[in-house]
Image (cartoon, rainbow, N blue to C red; front, side, top):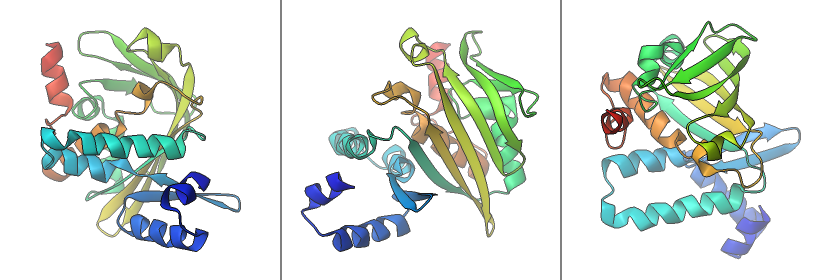
Length: 227
């Protein structure tokens, strides 16, 4: 938070006022931890705009926003992503746990598991290469899924070891609020571990709301590149 004060040259009251505006717009999401209220930049709405409207000439602006997010959050290494999807909790849970549906928005990778507490899961690319694995730490359908996470798609990410991903589903009217928290990351961890979440969640939203795959850039594009 001190970094925000310095960047804006503003008072604490002024910064909190700005944060409330960003939170109302969905660009900032918050989490309570004891008496603290933590703020995280939410890159998913920005990614949705980028995928649909931003030309390649505006790419440096998106990179600047990514840099700001990294500067503010690098001390905690807890990445929080929020998105609203017009669907039911049951359909959203199915999209998280059904291998065929999952592969349509996670770069062709389907996740296999029996989805019971303490069970293992594995994500395998259609070519047969293991991409990720871990343990289902908490399984509470259709509300909450907590998993350990071990990336395997390269030696660099595999060297990072185990982190944790928490999926939280909250019904809101005829839609759902999905909060994804990727934490237990070491400070300075390889950004490949969490950098793909905006694309994944954008693809999930597109799939559930339209029945189509997000291809700019989406899972189908990556699947074709590997074919």
